[in-house]
Amino acid sequence: MNYQLGWSTLPGLRGLSCSDFRAVPTTAPDKERGVAVEFANEAERDRFVRQLEEHFAEKRFTNAADAFDTVKAYVIEHVRK
Image (tube, rainbow, N blue to C red; front, side, top):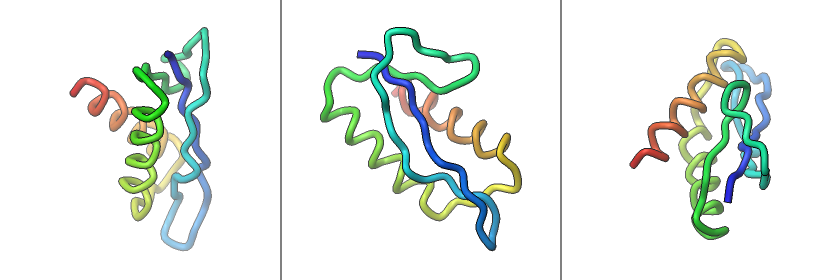
């Protein structure tokens, strides 16, 4: 099933942080302006969302575009594995 990934990008004292990752089922994934990925089942989806939360918990960014591009690159790289 295809999922559109989303998250919150919030300001903090050390820069922008990404959290509250979520994966919403979709029939029309938007890979140009968003991050879409396919998972075989809900367990795989939940595991990946937890992995995103853990990986980005301590990371900080200077701007929203950098945060978005970094998350998208991480997703693309890990989906290929």
